Each structure stands twice: as structure tokens, then as C-alpha cells.
Image (cartoon, rainbow, N blue to C red; front, side):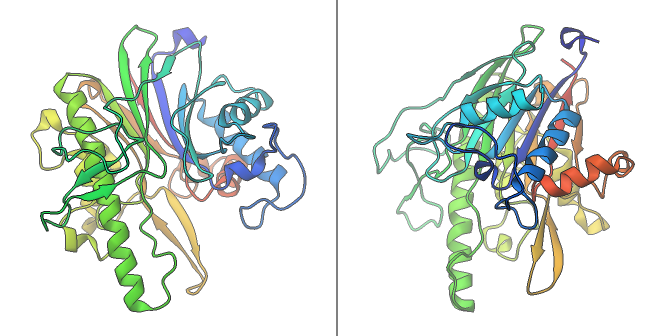
Length: 355
């Protein structure tokens, strides 16, 4: 079957740990035995594992979270296009939007034979303080958003260190689609020296993460009001019931972006998030796996989502978390299973759309 004959469109998101450290300034991969920034694996082995997983996914478009850096010397596009050529991926073109303040970029790797893609940011540019705006009127994501999150009648000033990537896609059928790639604020209490500081930093980070999700939700509302098809995908560093501070704010950032409290036409859908909301039944899907050194055990969490708008729900899409221990199709393939464990501390999430 040729790419033009494929009945479905497969869109993926994947947070790749320390992807930037696998490339030199020319965008060429380090295919050697020196240690990667990912613990216990060489740079060459991590690159090879990534190649195996990307090939197995065979997605038409992948929203890459924590992609290679863009600076005056380095290029996200150059590195990812080298990677695609090296491993013979049909998703071989790259779109990169506003640069991150960190070494972790959001980029979209796609198959140009299947998709037409352009960076298409929405909203007005802002100054450093940003406009005092209503929550349903969102400024551009590389600017500043002011929102009173703690109801003290003083708007908080919110910025993204990793501005979401807004894309306009044209699919093989000619149908148009909007994508928003997200890497929301981490809630980890980095810099905490004792329990009071851990609590204080955790609450502050959660407030910032929620504010970013309110900003994203405002953009979602704009698209849905115009009747546009939309996918919001990426790493939200959050999920329903993930930590003890959620009760303090009443809901998670994921629930805000999904629009759980809105009428059906204004909601986004992700079945993995729905399962997490019902986690009292004993099982919750997970997309990330971290080693907790003090406890000497693994911790798993649902952090990565692919949320789709109502117009994309018929026929029903098929979601898949490429988790080596939760998907029997992967368990049956030892090479793919080991590659997923070596490649990153997150696992890819895909959705197949019958478009």
C-alpha cells in the first residue's frame, strides 16, 4: 500500500529524554559508545533505539517534545532531518515554531507526501507584562498571559518557557486540521531544601502549570467556536489525580484543557484521561516511567495526551500508548520492547484518525 492509499492518518506525540545531547552542532548524531545523558545507555544505542521506535510507529506526523535545541549554532530542524534520513523515515520534514528558553524544543516531524504543514500561531503579540485579558481571549503563546488564578484580584503574569507549537495541517483528503503541541510547566519542586519549601514550590509550580493550561484552553475555545478540527497533544506534566495538591485547586490542568465542565461540543476527548478519572477501578494507563532512587523502585504516571475535537470523533479514532509492559503487541516483539525502554523515560502516544 502506498502512502497515498492509507485509510487512516496517524498522529503521535513523544517526549524524548535528552534528545538534544545526541547531536553535534552540525546536527549529526553521535553514533558512538560514549554515555548519553540518559542513564546507563550510550549515545549510539539511544539513537538506534529511537530509530527502531520511530520506524515501528510509522506515523504521518510526530509532535516531538524535548527536541534538539535551536540556538545561533544549533538547529532543531537540521538535527531532526538528519535523524529522519539516517533511519529512512517517511516522516522526514520538520516544522519548528517559537524557540524554547531551555534546551528542549517542540517540533513536528511529518511526511510531506501525506501532509502540508505550516507554523500558524494565533493571537496578538504582547509586551513583557501582557494585556489584562479575559480567559477566552488568549494572546500569542510566545508572549505573556495575565490571569488571576488565586482570586486575589491581582492578575498573575504567566509565560511559557516552551511556547506551544501551533500548526495548520492539510490532510490527504484536503481537509484542514489544527494542532497544538504542548510541554507544560513541570510541577517538580526543584530547589527544595526541606518539607516546607517542597510544599511551597510544589504549590507555586502547580499554579503556573494550571495557568498555562487555562491559556491553552482559551485557544481551544477559539478553535471550537469556529468549528475547526483540532488536536492538542504533548506532555502536560499533569493528569487527573496525580498529586495531593490537585484538591487544593479543584481540578487538574488536563481536565481544564479537555473542558470537562463544558457542554459536549466544547470538549476535547482522550480515552486515557477518561480512564484516569475513573482510576478507582484499579487500573490507569501510564505514559512515563521514572526511577525513584530513595525508594529504589519505578514510578509511572500518565503525563502525555492526544486530545481530539468532536468533529474528529466519527468514525471513532484509535488511541495507543506504546508502553512495553501494557501492550501485548509490544511484549511479543523483544527488539521493540527494549528499544522503548532505552529510548526515553516517556512512551509515545498515537491516534489513528479515519479521515
